[in-house]
Image (cartoon, rainbow, N blue to C red):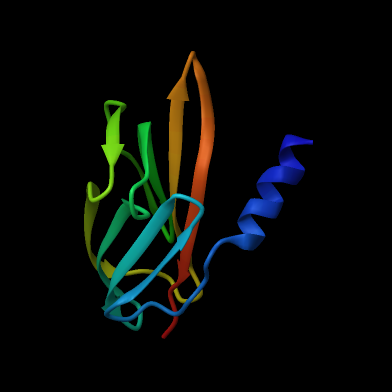
Length: 118
């Protein structure tokens, strides 16, 4: 059942070609991919207006796999920027997830993605 929920959330996530200014949000989580074509300069994880949670961001895809640590309180306009400064594989899907940590549980707060295309 949880796998079905994750699949539904993944299909609802934003997917757009990466270029300077590519951005989007899903639930509470936003992504901004800076770059052109296959070249990605940075990926920024942030929150939608007036939202907050205690936990971490996970940035992954195209060879990226980074968790912000330690868990902390995030609130709009807080953000985390991962400096990439390299080409990623064509058709890679780069995603940002926000994970809430409450009472020993991890809850997905949203997943926003962008596709890297030549």
